[in-house]
Length: 124
Image (cartoon, rainbow, N blue to C red; front, side, top):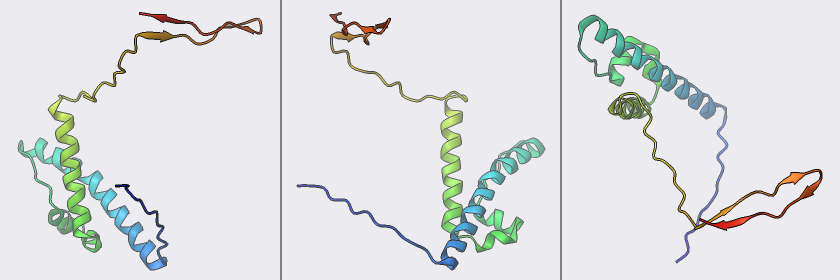
């Protein structure tokens, strides 16, 4: 059975584009404010703060226009990002990309004085 994919483009009108731009701006603002508020709460009270979209909306009334799910996803994405960061004590733990050995090693051709020597292949 073959998989099929369809490509489509959407062209929002001015009102929709304006709403998307405002939503992106509000989510970016929420993303930047959440760690600052958590850090200041920890320094003042010694405990952690659970940021919620309702908490942000009461502090900044202009966030009320943003979609609630967009702000909830910002919170969830940020918690996931920071959990992954602090689980490994601030070190990046990306998986190493390894290549299976094929038993041969190939060298690139050498260029000296305009002449090339053929590539070498040898068994390891």
